[in-house]
Length: 311
Length: 276
Image (tube, rainbow over all chains, first blue to last red; front, side, top):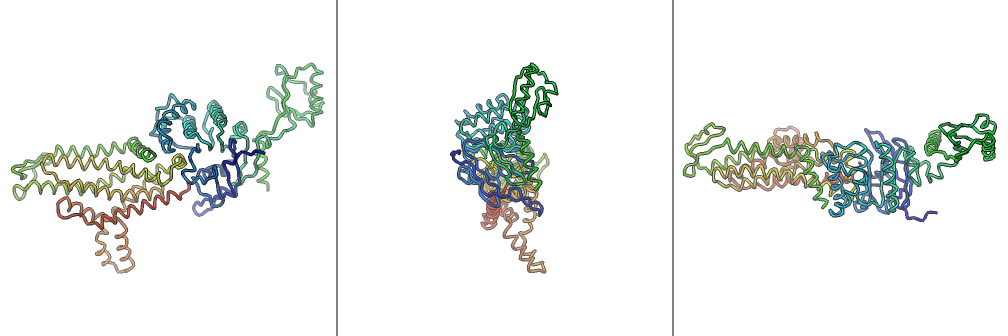
């Protein structure tokens, strides 16, 4: 069992909004714990309550019930937010500031001394690939650039806990990879990372543990490894991309699931898989790869949400 | 350092939105007009002749003591600046709080390790420095130009500028409260203007209340008079003071300042309790 101390704890948090007399329940008795050094992903469809939960954790929103603690402290106190990084969804930096000026303003508000800012700002702008646009006004940045600047802002205070709300939203694939690499590098410094996202493939690649939030409630929680269980599917690739004769597959009881250069075959058991290998070798076909497949996080997510909706 | 960062941010915002430039242009135009349009001919300490925009100023009783002319002119300017200065300042600072509370922006400010009280008061301080700088430029400019042209130095005009600032701060407090509650720039500008308009006739609250049939509504009028800024009385005291006819009475100014302080305190409490 992991003995790392708990950094984020949420106990029975409920939040209700009132809109023109209507009550909207955004969170409904949420319980969560995130340990130091973990990369935790909160998954959910739009409107599931992910952003509300992150806002509760940062003291932006007051819960109606329950309590949220970050490093054991109530985040509504300013001092409890020292060395917390946050990249909000759809953030809007003041358009009149330059990239460098933006980081300087928010660094100063975080109480970072000017000397440290002089060192950190160029480093971070370089890290997120904005060094050459440091003196351009943020109003002229593209969405992807603004997102990268937001990430630099979140990392400014060398955070112990980093909250990211849809961090790759509006970012191109190259930028996404860059952000993922930055997060992995940040993690090696012992930073705890809490990610809100509906891009499940991103979460699957980055997170250790995830929780699925649906209609304000946590309906499944666990490690990515645990949730994405093994299946009876295997990826099979033959040398030079040759496809095996179909009768070879059907005779062994294997079902072809997809065909995309390689084959994905579903077999009833390992015995069947070995029969398939024997059949292919009997045809003098060279096997280049056989690898087991896991259910993608997306499949698990859809399955769990549908189960919940069916109740 | 955090307070300084907020003040600098307020100035940068004012610069970027051309608020500061607008302030400077209007004030400079006003000072230039005053410098070139007003020509006075002073003989033996009396105003013998004068022109405004090249047109002769009629002196009904022959030559008049220049001191009288200067303080009268200054009291008129003080009265003008009292109205225009406050209206311009409200217009220039009206978007401050709604911009801060804009979705996507407020998250960036409020999640920093700075208390919400510090954040709001830091912006308030930024607005004070901005308006004070402009008042110093405008009122100080009027004072210097008139004094240099006439040789009459009337420091009461400068004190009057301080009183204008106090009244503006009261309106700024109210504007912050409206901004925090509504997050709307139009409302943050219009409601202080409306308050100014409503508070003016309340100086005659005794007469208004006496003309009312209902005792309840008469009490409401008296109540509003005591709660709202005493704009008419402070304005009257201000011009009288510049003319050298007595010192401003404390109660109207103090209750006006108290109104602003209470509004600002309410704005801080609301901002602290608000969910974003």
